[in-house]
Image 1 (cartoon, rainbow, N blue to C red):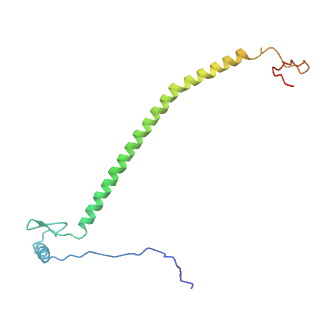
Image 2 (cartoon, rainbow, N blue to C red; image 1 turned 90 degrees about the vertical axis):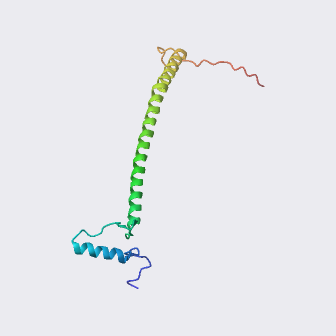
Image 3 (tube, one colour; image 1 turned 90 degrees about the horizontal axis):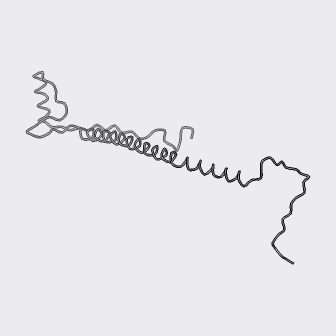
Length: 140
């Protein structure tokens, strides 16, 4: 039981290499090699048709997908910047419109408090008698 573990240490791996054999393409490659020309790479023309190249479709799709993702990321970044600029404008407008009005309200409150409060020259005297105001409630 020392070497046994119920958990895998690594994922399954596959080593698949697609193979395709076309006798005409092989003959063409041999002729080119005999003449000293460059060997065939990628898709070549054969009687007006594309010759199958193993994995070419998958590579092309992967490149297209990566390009789409790059473009999508760039678009997302632009949208985020625009959204942030709009939010900054809204916050700036709120600050320039709302803050002065709130400051005015505080000033008015201070003025009202100063007008209704007792004169400031009077100091608190703990020995002064308390003025009692009669209550209008008549109860028995």
